[in-house]
Image 1 (tube, rainbow, N blue to C red):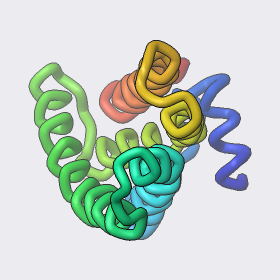
Image 2 (tube, rainbow, N blue to C red):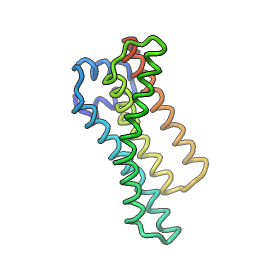
Image 3 (cartoon, rainbow, N blue to C red):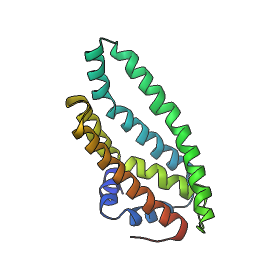
Image 4 (cartoon, one colour):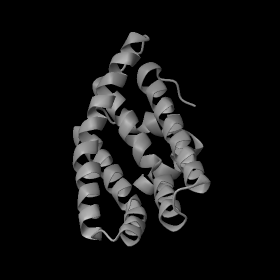
Length: 162
């Protein structure tokens, strides 16, 4: 199935999508592609806010973009691998029978599936600026991300599809 179709299906039934992703067996190439795709979309989501910040402060937009590129595309994946390792340990601590790959794919897919909402957060930050609306869209993004990640961890650890 196409990635966009899987993202839409994740909003309806995240556990079923995770079951399909995990049924192919461990594919680190797929996990890395999902992670990098999510990070690139997250980087694109920062563009409107960086443009606004550059306009308001008089900074060079290229410097802001370069800093965000480094942070989101190069540093964030490393941090996400560490978070996946910690969540794998926590999952095993609570009796889950997951593998490291399944825990990683749950986190990485949750980030990619919630990335359309991250684009909305970026637009709100760029057009409206800091305020209630931007925080509200950020909270919606985080809620969707947490929902997808928890559903993925349940599927990874206990095989529960919802």
